[in-house]
Structure formats: structure tokens, C-alpha cells
Image (cartoon, rainbow, N blue to C red; front, top):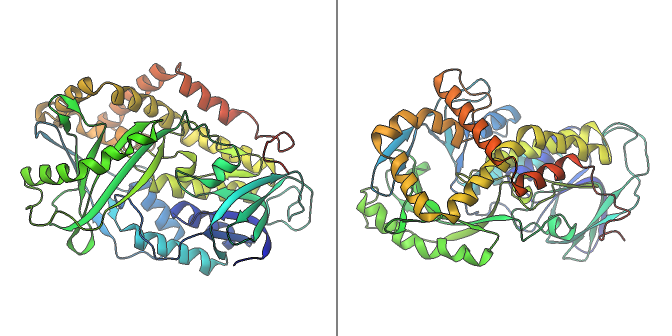
Length: 451
């Protein structure tokens, strides 16, 4: 669609996993929803291509018809001195004991098609800005946007590069870490964001276990992130390096510079044979721990990477994107106008902010103390220690404590989680995050983006 205007109930900007799930759920409920993305699908995306247990549970439930994934179980963590710990994959009360390897090119295309087949209107254009407006008519009178009737309320206009626009009662920003929606609606403090940058490539390699490698960039000085090698379908391994950069995006180049050295390290560890050192490389930004971002502003709801919903400890974001997409859609269907934002904010506070906020503080501390982080990585991956800690480590690191299997490992993970949350509760970042979730959505009559 170019050079024309469209009015819909909901505009979803960004058709990654979170945006497509949100659009699909809304369209299935009879809501007029537009799904906007500048790319044509299928398209590639920088990612480790692993879908965690909670993401699998959601995909099984909504049924997009995925069947070409590679099922995975345990994961190896390799330390700076070569020590290896295997983190066990176990089923919990509300998730299974497996992960999937599936290239984002396939996952995203499948979910995008599912949204289109469900009735979402596909808009292939670049979003250049979102404008919160004071009033717009829509379909909702007391209930969600799918309810018959009309009532005045706030809304937003999504401006497109092609010259057209979308007017909507609600905008769901699913356009990634560098979200145009979030920036144009004044929802980001760039000096408070916890950024990360990752670069990956594919190569032919038989990989026994998905592996994360904690390594030193120089002896005794930890690299501010990790490298990975994950098996994939058809014998193609996903290999990459991700670095935490704090609020300084200029530091993202460290990941790209480190990839060749990491490939040589994998050869030394006998994880690849060195005959192939990767093909096309693709990088991308991550926004982690919900830091520096207000997820709700009037009629605008942010999900996935746009909201900073990426695990600060291990970089997982696919499951969080899809879960937040489903939660945002549910909030819109339940309550129109500001009520949807309040419901979605409560979901974030209940299911995401505690883990995201506390681990964001931990990640910042580790990044700023590379010597101590190197010692910690060596200690955790020393087999006599790592073997005892592995079951609890797997639950906490992967944010699977809630709903995890009963037993000693879950109890230990609960204790660690509680101690870290209590120890970080007084930090400025945690307090700021709590305020952004409990305060009411921004009043569009005072928003600088108001017409």
C-alpha cells in the first residue's frame, strides 16, 4: 500500500514473531488489524535461531503449522579454560523439556503468513513515525476493539514512507530494538537503554550439543558477552558472537571484530574443523532488560525487542516477543483505549519486569567488572562446581523458575532469584522500571507527539 490512507482498529508495526502473533490473534477475533513491515517475506534476520520452551508452548497452542524444526535438549556451557558444564533440559508444569532450532527466515515467514491467512491486512511499507492524537472514533464501547458500537478516545496515526498513513485506535510497536514507534512516541531514554549487538553466520558443521562459550578477550579479562554454536536443520550450524554494550552503541563493533577470533577458538575446541569459517554475516541490535523504555504510552503498546524484552543474561528474545504479542492482543481485546495499556502493563509487571529488571542490573555489574567476570566464568564451568549447579543454573538463566519442575533445583533457583531481586531492588534502574509500569499511560493531551 502506497500513497493512501487506511483506518483500522489496530496497527501492528513490525512482523517479526511478536508482531505476527499479535496480528494473528487480533484478526482471528474479528478485529480490523493492519500488519506493517518494510520487508517482504521470507527475509533473513540476525538471531541464534533457538526457540525456548515457553515459546514452543505458545506455538503449539496457536498452531501456525511449523514442522521443519530441529528439536534440541541439553545445552553445554564452555568456560575460558575449556571447562564444560551441561545444563539439563527438563519439563516444567507449563513448558516442555526441549528447544527448537529453526532459522528466523522460516519462522518469521510462517508466522507472517498465519497472520495474513487469519485476516490481517498486510502493508508493505516503511514506518517513519507515529503520532498520538487526541481523539479518534473506533469500534469499542466499554469492551475491546472488536465490540460493536463507537466511542471517542485516543488514537494514533502511523505515517508511512510511501506517503500514506494508518489511523488506529491502538498501535502495537513490534519493530525491534531500534523501534521507530518507540522513538517517535517519546518512549525511549537512549542514555538508559541496555544495548547489545550480535553478529552471526552459518556454516556446515555437525554439532552434538548447542553450546555457549564464555571466553576472555585477553587473559583474565572477560569478553562482555559470549559466543555460540547451535545446530540447525540440514547440518547448518548457527555461529555467532554477542556483546553487551551498556548505553553506548558505538561499542557494538566489538562483536563483529571478535567473530573471526571466535571461529578460530571453536577450531581449537574441536567444535568445528576449520575448513569453513562461515559465509554471509548478519548483525543486529538487542535491547535488554526493559531498561530505558516505557512500554505503554496512551494508545501505543511496545512488545518484544521494542520493549526491551530480551533476557539480559543469555540473549533470548523470541519467546518473550511472542508472549508479549499475545498479551498485548489479549489486553486490546479485553479493554479499549487506556484500559488496554493498563492491562498490558500489569502483565509486564507480573510476568516480565522482576526477572528482566534484576538480571539487567546483574549484567551491568558483570560487564563493568571484566576481571571478576572472568574468574566467575572459570569457577562456574569448573566441572566439580558446575555439575552441582547446572540444574538450578539452567532454570534461573533461562527464566524457567516460575512453573519449573518441583525439586531441589527449583528450590535453589528460587533462592538465588529471590536474593538477586532483593539485592537489586534499591537500584535506580529497578525503581525507574517499576514507576514506568505502575503509573498510568501517558496522557496524549500532554504528549509532545500530539497533533
